Image (cartoon, rainbow, N blue to C red; front, side, top):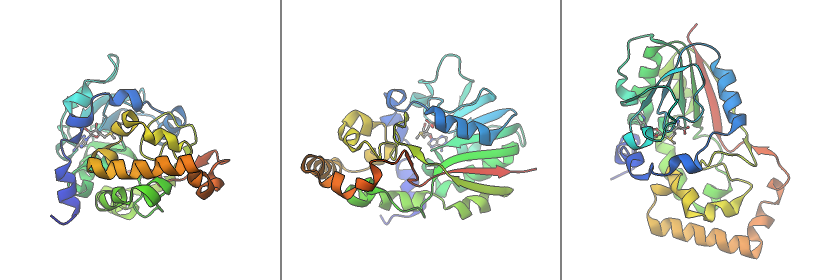
Length: 259
Ligand SMILES: C[S@@+](CC[C@H](N)C(=O)[O-])C[C@H]1O[C@@H](n2cnc3c(N)ncnc32)[C@H](O)[C@@H]1O
């Protein structure tokens, strides 16, 4: 089947029911990223959509929406209540929250996120904040040199920033989110200065991009990375990164204001 936005998203719709086990171990919130997201959100009742185990939820969160019961089961006991539902059909009244947050989730929503984005807009009075990846950003060394297949999968499912603006309406700003070299959260771009971390299967298991690839494709890329680390080829090719503290690897904080 050719890679269209909708068939890619539908194919992975139950992904987190399969890979969610242990997610909370490798995917803890990074406090610096948390600060950026909380500053962007501001005050007021918040709904966190695609909430997963609850990373980055501000104290103002009144409700979390999560599609996977397995992910929801990993929320802290004192976290906001969670409703098992899909972003495309939020069981919420119009304008029921001041703010909405969606972190590293919209690319999992069907139809290139369109319906879910319109739902976010419908239920939010004041401001929506997204953390997403910009498909127009230049791929970093991991996907450029070892896993170009990840970019092939991601390009059709991540909306561009202008597509986001068109679906969400309101006044849209998008800021690059440079990822600290010692990022606590274990998402795809987190280990850009710690390449050996990608060799750990437990880390890869918490990254959906790896879980979508055939096992032999992952093994092939990992073996090449292992060899390049052992020979020093990785270090030679990426010498310019070794003294950098934070790097733009394509993540964006998108803020939409409705007032
Ligand atoms: C990468 S995780 C991010 C979780 C959390 N926001 C975080 O930052 O740790 C993506 C989450 O989106 C959820 N998700 C995927 N498709 C969804 C949908 N259509 N509606 C609601 N949640 C969805 C997944 O089950 C998963 O928990």
